[in-house]
Image 1 (spheres, one colour):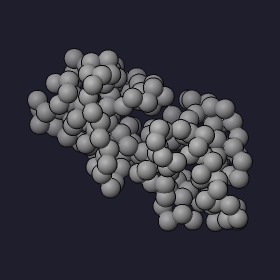
Image 2 (cartoon, one colour; image 1 turned 120 degrees about the vertical axis):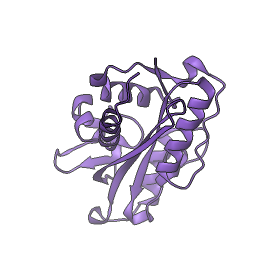
Image 3 (tube, helix red, strand yellow; image 1 turned 60 degrees about the vertical axis):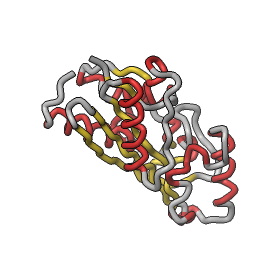
Length: 200
């Protein structure tokens, strides 16, 4: 059996596959099985969005599904862009425009007041077993005034990790998978699935 990943973001699918490599589960992007599946994420919280997407992917494919929702919370912006992080600058999703809008919103905000965090909620749904699980993770940092690094995606070039002295876009994939919000959420979800004796 396979687990469907309720995402059309290829970077995210690859990241999840790496995070769960140790479990030996076969992860399949939703478009490989149900390209017409709708994945609505219009709920007010990361947890509800992650669960909604996992439920939709499971319903569309008949298989267990995992979904996540993640985003950036900036204290000086009252927690924005939050659950609207991917479409902060409007549709279609565009990392460059999102980053530009974020920098414009923070213009004039001093370095000491640019604290932020990445948040992630990861959800697993298996209708056949009546199993639904949600776990969360976070990673603290601050927002730079100019982007640095070519790795990662989303707001990574602006997200400064003080302990490492680099942005999220300047560290290796292995390093990111040790400390990222998504790594924390999926590590917790994987452990919960093992505790629930989930076997595919």
